[in-house]
Each structure stands twice: as structure tokens, then as C-alpha cells.
Length: 203
Image (cartoon, rainbow, N blue to C red; front, side, top):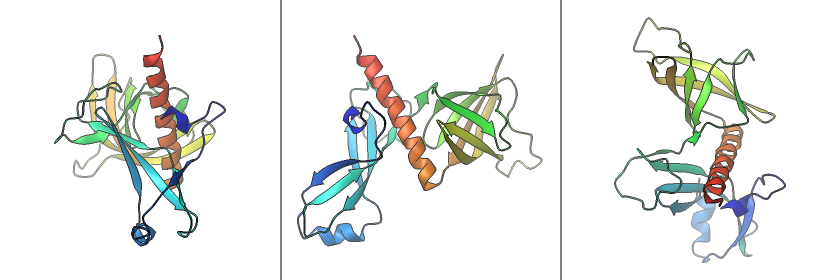
């Protein structure tokens, strides 16, 4: 997997040759989404696939950065076997570096990202990050900015749960991003996964 990104910087796509039966080509032309799934232990990588070139010639498949899922209760990149019947969730990158969290007005959010996935995160803070709502039936939502390198990813975060501990609040939120921002975050999380994997394998 580390071959997907070269040492001089991340690549948008990796191009692979793909041989297709001619009878399959019309189905692929009608597909709204195409993915390549890779299972490694208890982790599943779903690579978005884009087909290019004419069907009269060998196809080229372009793989973008994958989403990573694992079974609930598992987040170990070295898990050795996948069990069937579990419920998958997005893999979390622990204590991500080189990423900042801001409020919609651009001011830094007084919180530390404990872990980050492609659709949510858990935050540590010294006070509650969400104002109390009069109606408990309405989801508690606010706009935050995830700053990844030079990119600002605008996301509407929804409170999942928050808990007050002896010294810190632990807050879990979910969010959705537009297509371009989602690819940026997927790439960031995947590179974090690869860095963790290389660190574990280092002598």
C-alpha cells in the first residue's frame, strides 16, 4: 500500500492496467460507483476507482486514497484475522499531527483531537464544546474548520455524545464533507495509517 504514495509527496491517483471482458464493459459504463476492496486482517480498504480511455483499448483504473473501516472494538493496524458478522466503523487515526481545528470565525478551538476518522472525531477539552439545547430532540450542530496543510475543510459537526471526566471533557462528533474535502481528508488519514504501519515495522 505504501507504493501508492511516493517519497516526494502524495499522488492524486495511482494508475493501474486493467483487463476486462468485453461483456463486462457496458455494466461498468453504467456504474455510478466502482470500488476496489482490500481486506488486511480486520481492516478493509475501499479504494474509489475511476476508469479512463476507450473500451476499445485496455482499460486504465485510477485508484484514489481509500476509506478504511474496521470492526467495532478493533482499531489495531496489525490485527491478524477478520471475523465475520461484526459491525464496521471508520478506522480512527490516533492523535493526528499537522492538523488544526478552528471555529467558523477562524479562531482556534480550545480542544485536542484524540482521534480522527473520515467521518468523525473525538475531542479532549477543558470545558463543554456544545452549548446546552432547550430541546433535547434537536441535534446539537456547529460549524468547524479542519485545517490540513494549506487546505481548510469546512464541516458541519453533529454531537454524538460528550462526557465530563475528572480533568477533561471527551466529546464525540460526526461530520460530512463535500467531495473534494472528503478526498483530502481520506488522503490525510490514509497517509497517517501508512506512517503508523511503517513505525510499527521499524526495527
